[in-house]
Length: 226
Image (cartoon, rainbow, N blue to C red; front, side, top):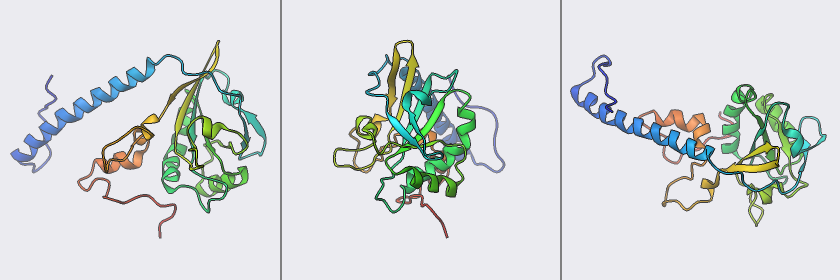
């Protein structure tokens, strides 16, 4: 089905409209592909049972909380983002922080459907300091530093490197199972191509992709700007 329409913007040329119509077809195909992939994701059978009921430290309160306790009443989906912040690091990952700046604004909306937490190896007080500085009142940050969660669910490599892994867990009558993880992070990719494993939920890159200059070559977000 053609995606063309009769609308035009002021002053546009015939060459622009022809190229834009061709792009519109590509954009429509991409939308269909994204929806098809999302549908495939929803058809996955249950993943492995929860390896153990991990005992996290809540950054806001310092209290211990088990993973099973992160499911709020009426919710059976738990989304866990692995924040790249090690205890010995001088600062957290700027890219993760940029993404979480945006996710903090969406947290209240997501809470209508699921539970969302951000976990890192850093100590609770380190995470609280970042959350206070960034104004992440809507995000729940937890430290997994005294558990094997990071290694088990691929947010830490065998040599101790921190990785920005997104994991989804599902609770059912049969228990808690891993439902999905952003394994595209680890999949082989063409040279020079970024893994883009969580770009779909990262507004920064999506907005830049709408512009003529795109993502700005080698530009990366920073923790602070002058």
